[in-house]
Image 1 (spheres, rainbow, N blue to C red):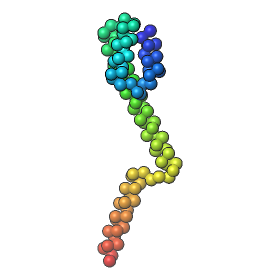
Image 2: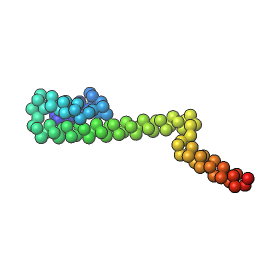
Image 3: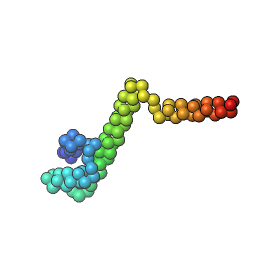
Length: 100
């Protein structure tokens, strides 16, 4: 039953948006209704916070990946490519000033 409640919470709220305060509030409410022990409640809070953090990281990774794909599709150079061009320009400028 506890697993079913966890899944319901995760799905119903959106794991990535869970904050520590919100998780604790939800677990306290569930603990009262389900007669969870204090230890079970703490364990549930810990598990939900871990899942929330995992989902947030996954979301950030996916957003970063999509942004890179979009920039690549628009043929926008990366920071690394711009830095390489800058270095090449500086090198060429150094060569031309020596020749003058």
